[in-house]
Length: 84
Image 1 (cartoon, rainbow, N blue to C red):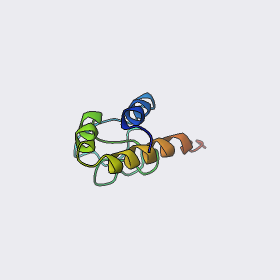
Image 2: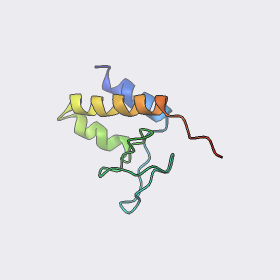
Image 3: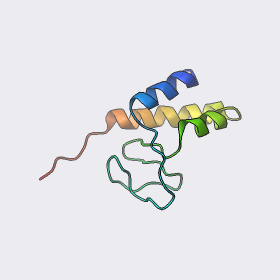
Image 4: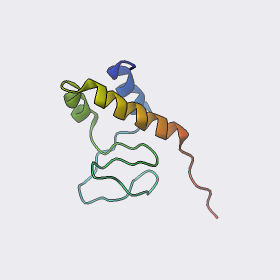
């Protein structure tokens, strides 16, 4: 697994961290439905602040690294739908 700090920096560069209110159900980036954690399965947006993931990494770094790597891969693979 790549170093966690490098993953967080890359996720910040891709603007993946966008904390939002608990009432929001659609992604601010691609408008897909958010999962229960506020994350977007379509474009990789993470609905929690980076600081929260860094705190969680203290107890489970592999899980956080997987989450960040998956979100980065989703964002890189995401292409907006063409408007008609």
